[in-house]
Every structure is written in structure tokens, then in C-alpha cells.
Image (cartoon, rainbow, N blue to C red; front, side, top):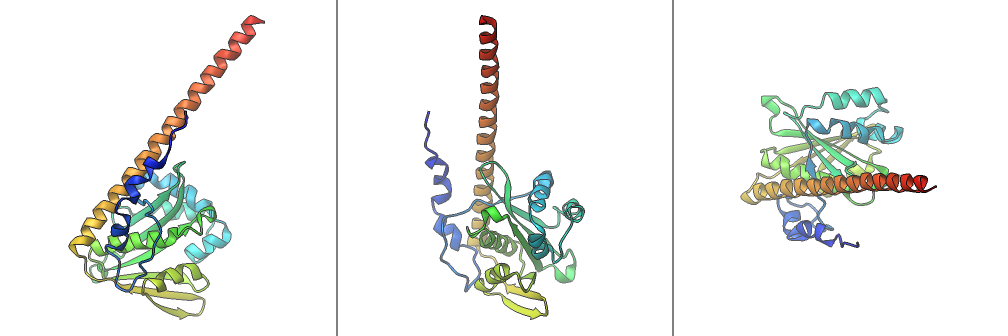
Length: 240
């Protein structure tokens, strides 16, 4: 049975141009390919987050954390993620593997309540698709909806991909030796910002649930095939 998968794309493509531009800071680049479903992560995704970060090689961990984090340090980072204070966003493939994620961290202090810091990681197998840019746009949208007026990015100066995303969004980048500090002023949230936030969140959740159902379905079929194979082999042995 050959079933077309085009129907899976239609929910995201419908009105995607409207969603892409809504909530974007002024001066940000508006050219953009199709919408990428992004899901908000929760504590129950810690295992997937660990697996994602452990797939980063030494160089990628160096760019993400500012040092070549060991497996133990990566595990501690994930263990101490505060899902109540911060927001974590992820992009999953069809096998429900986390291929890209972003951490929008808040200071949790009254004096800095309108500030947030952004960090992102993308697996090598998923690069070249603009996923880092997508996660940055998602984080900006969410930050604006939470009345954040300044987003910061602390990155190594050699992390040109991240700094390019920040510059293209209109951020000011200051370099001090091997490290760079980028900050982006965010305009106040509008009604469209909040609507876009709700719709984007809904799209990410629906996409995740569809992929989850598909994965479970194919796993179920694989199990059925194993049972059938075993029955067939048993019949052949009996016939002999």
C-alpha cells in the first residue's frame, strides 16, 4: 500500500508566510523557506536532550558551551536545566530524534527580568537547512510575548554561523578577544505576536504528535511482521 505523505505537510504550509513574518523584530530578514515545526520541550525530554548534545563532537561542544564539554559535563548541564524558569525549544525528525535545540535562559532576577540569553545547537546531519535561524526566530517570538526587550548571545568569535544569525536579525555584536557578545533589542509584543506564538506552539505540538503516532504505528507493524515470520518459520519446520 502506497500512501502519499503530502497531507502531513499541508497544516504547516497553510499560512506559513503570515506566521513567519509575525513577531519578527524590525529590520530582520523576511526571506524564508517553508515553516519548520518547533516544539517546546519539557522535563520529560531530558533523555532526548542528552542524546542530542552527546552527538555533538568536541569542536561543536566547544562552540556551543565555550569549552570542550565532556560527557559528564553535558549530562550535568541537562540535569540542571530549569524548565520552570527557562524555555527550551526543539526540532525533531521523523524518527523523533532531536536534531536541533535552543535554550532561552532568563536571569530570574527582578533587575534583569526583561533580558534573556539564547544558545543553540544543530547536529551536523541537519545543517544547511536554516534550523539555527528558525530556532532563533522562535526564541525571539517567545521572548517578545514574555515582554523581554533585550536578547543576548554569548558566543566564541569563531562561531561565525551563530553571529551571522544575530547580525542578520539586527543585533549589535561586540568582540573582545576570542569571545563575542551580541545583543538584540526587541520591540514590544503586539496582538499579532501573541497570536503567532499560540499558532506556532500549536503547530509544533501537532507535528510532534503526528510523528509520534507514525513512529508507534511502524513499530507496531514491525512487531506484527516478526510474529508472522516466526509463525511461518514454525510451519515450515513442522512440515519438514
